[in-house]
Every structure is written in structure tokens, then in C-alpha cells.
Length: 364
Image (cartoon, rainbow, N blue to C red; front, side):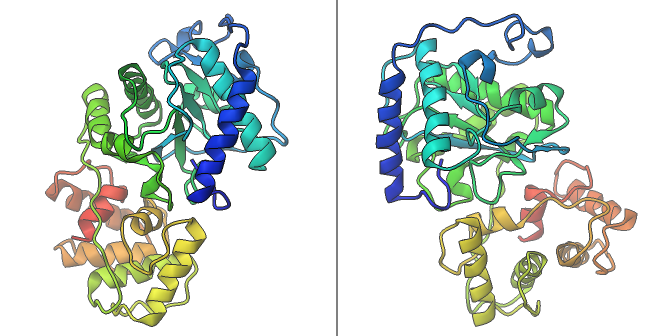
């Protein structure tokens, strides 16, 4: 996990500092789950045991965390970029939680731990940012995080202890990740194909090549528990010199995010500069080419009640696919009906919401 100010080479510095912090907290006394913990709370019986902030001795946040009155849209998987130690006990999980909070608050300058949950190599789950566990239990809100630029208000972040660039996580840790993701998906109504890696949004190696390569299997394993199609969205590469509807959709989405462009369907210098500016803003790789990171960040879900250039883009694409819709930029009942029709024709969930997979099919 990185921030806009802590990237690439800084990842090695982060690993060194965090590893040092962990050594300072090794040997902490065992933590006993209290009667109010997730394991003892009947309301959380269907989900994995989670050590809450109080249980593992978290510091209070520097300022109140922000609780958002909306469900998250996706899950983002990270690795901690720390050593792959063979310490699998609960004490280690507690040491990790404390060290991450100390690092992120004192060195990263954040108000609290950045991610919502942390998963140790021994398969223990700890709450990261305060109030994340309570929000998950209720399933109707989320806590704003600090784990992925551009996604902190819409995505649950899960840190996995270790560095998974050249080796895979321990089997127990992976199984616990499946269980945690499945529980989050059930509680929030997130579909398994909305499980991503950090590098799908920002310029980073996180969560490591080997863990990232496991994400299709992770989606499939979560889908086996929760149901649904685990196939992730596929995005086109759109670059300077291209013309057509994909370019026009890209331009509309950039305008929705504040770019000054005329959606004319021609990818010229102004569009390339707008793409670069957006990539820089979200912490993606800055190359002026609209690929996975750019589309993942631009294609926010749209539903009835939405307005703007992004809605116009959807309406135009629906018409092109044989679902005539007035491109007025207002997502009303008529547009919703056309979206449902398009989703039915493409074997997508028919909920009338233009999420990542519906967006990606509209761009084919």
C-alpha cells in the first residue's frame, strides 16, 4: 500500500521502517478476545473473527475518522511489503497492527491506519482504521480510508502481511483472505468481480506479482461462496491518434471529472494532456494512454438520478447497441430500463446500475 507521496523506491524505505517498527513490538503479551469482540458477538458469527482496535491496543486517531453513509463499491487487496516471517501467532498479528498504525500516523502523516483490515501471515484479521468493523457489521456505511488514491471513499482496503513479488502467501493466509472478502461482499452487496489489486488503480507494485496473479482465483473462490460471475472487467487501450466512440466516452468521463474538452471522438493533444493530468491526480502511471488504471478510476458507477457528461456517454452507447436513449445527460427511468435491457442482452446482473462490468461492455 502506498500514498501519492510514498511510491516505488519509497516502498523499500517503507518496508525497512515498518520492519524495524515490528521488531520493537515483538514479544507483546497475548491478546485475549473480549466478550464484545467479533468472535464473541453473535451478529458476526457468519464472518471471520476480527480483533477490533480496542482489542489490539490501537492508539486513538489524530482526528475523528470520517464515516460515509454509503456502501463501498469494491475491495482492494494490498501487501504490506514487509518480510515474510515464519511467525504466525496472534502476538505477531497484534505487533503488525500496532507497527502499521505507528508507521502510518507518525511517518505517513495519516490520522489513523490507512486500510480497513489487516491479515497476518498466520491468518489473524485485525481492524485497521477505527470504526471499520462496526460499519462492516451493520453493512450500511463505510469508513473513509487512506490506502489507494482515488478510491478511499468507495473501496475497502485489505492489507496482507508479507511481500508477494516472488512467492505466494501461506495457504492459511490465502484461505482467510477468501473468507474475509466473501464476508465483506455479503455484508455490502459487492460482487466478486469487484475485487482488485492496488496496482489496478495506482502506479505501484502492490500487491506483488504473485498475489496479484492470484486475484482471478480469489474472485472465483469468493464467487463459489457468494455466487455470481467472477469475471473482472476488461478495458481497451485508447491512445493519441485514435478516433471513434471509445474516445468520445473517454472525453465525456474526463469532462465529468473537470477537464475542459470537447467530446468530439478524436484523441488529439488536448485529450492526451487531459488524460495525463487525470493520471497524475489519481496516482496512476502517467503516460497519456487510457488503460486499466485510467478506466478503473474514471468509470464510477451510475444509477438512476445521476446527471452529467458520463450519463450522456452511457446513453449514446446504449443507442449504438440498439437501445435507443435520448442523450440528455439525465439518468431517469427510461435510461434505467435501457440499461437493464442491455445488461440482459449481455448476461450481466440486471440491476440498472452502470458498474465497472457494464461500463466495460459498453466500450467493446
